[in-house]
Image (tube, rainbow, N blue to C red):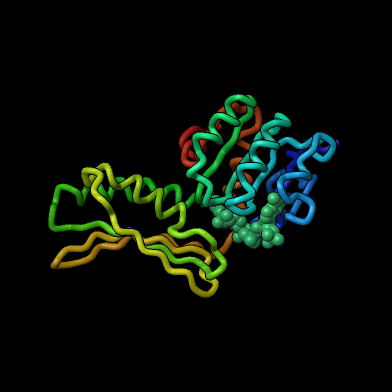
Length: 235
Ligand SMILES: NC(=O)c1ccc[n+]([C@@H]2O[C@H](COP(=O)([O-])OP(=O)(O)OC[C@H]3O[C@@H](n4cnc5c(N)ncnc54)[C@H](OP(=O)(O)O)[C@@H]3O)[C@@H](O)[C@H]2O)c1
């Protein structure tokens, strides 16, 4: 008998494969993998398929994620959701998670570095905001296959810095080109100079690392959490 955490992976694209590759080194066993061929409209999420699964990790598509969450929560299985582009339905997802009594961690970005970067962006906004000559802006760049724009990460940076600037509109620009794994910049520009804070992902391993960290953390918890909360509430 192994003590490994037993995982179901929904979505076996770039992220699903990166998580499957790293899981054994992090004490996790991938018990079930379902891509769209066996899980269109969530039909593969059944009690039989999920028997013995501790945590389900979803990296699918914006239109698939909420139905997947509904069905997995209905089975009483905790979740880690990295899929982006569904956050307009966050209130609905909160109700699903709370009424099912499961635990779920979600984030537009599971990189530990990005989540520490969020804290820097807020601190920087507080430093610059009293000086009216500086205007904040956000720029993000990703590979041409990414469906949603702006990225959830760029929107999160904007959400975190806006209160310091009296909730004024902060411009966000997106680039979709080539194979860029993910770059986010927060700049403060004045007539005299520009200050830029930048996070550059080197690949997908950082996201996979964070998603597996969240999977271990969410075991035995109930409620909806962001990955930033996971990093602020050590086990
Ligand atoms: N939070 C983070 O840290 C983070 C990091 C990277 C990416 N992401 C997000 O995670 C998602 C996946 O990214 P990716 O780069 O892995 O994309 P990807 O390579 O396109 O993989 C997504 C996979 O999910 C499959 N799929 C679609 N509907 C499904 C369903 N109902 N059940 C099971 N599988 C389904 C897709 O199949 P088909 O291709 O056949 O449709 C595809 O194989 C995107 O929303 C992306 O923005 C988040």
